[in-house]
Image (cartoon, rainbow, N blue to C red; front, side, top):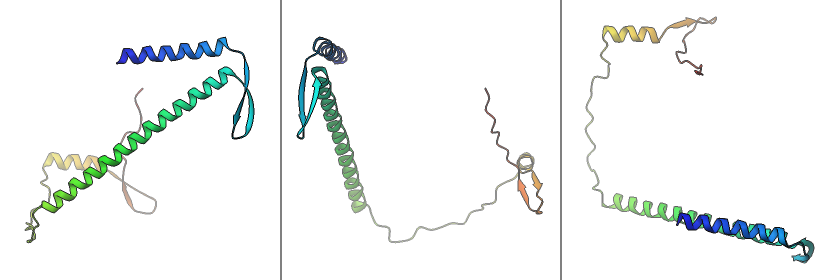
Length: 137
């Protein structure tokens, strides 16, 4: 498949170069009632650009529709899960636990190093920034 794709790309490029080099005839192109005097290679490349825009539009439409369909399917599955999930009638019990961290001497020393404060002119205290913003080169 990959090799076939490369061969088709090479053939398209060679064909485009052949058209642009071998033909110098001019013609009249009418678009929405307006006449344009153009040479044949220009008409060819305008057609190629229109084809590329068409393919890109079709691809984007396909991707958008697939994304929308995936989202629709996921919402449908989630609604089915909610509908089949057992409902809880009783509130879960909340147990109290000790939320005070256990401090050791090593941890106390680490905290003291991290939270060095400097007084400001207003008398308030602010912790210093311990992050290093310099990048190594």
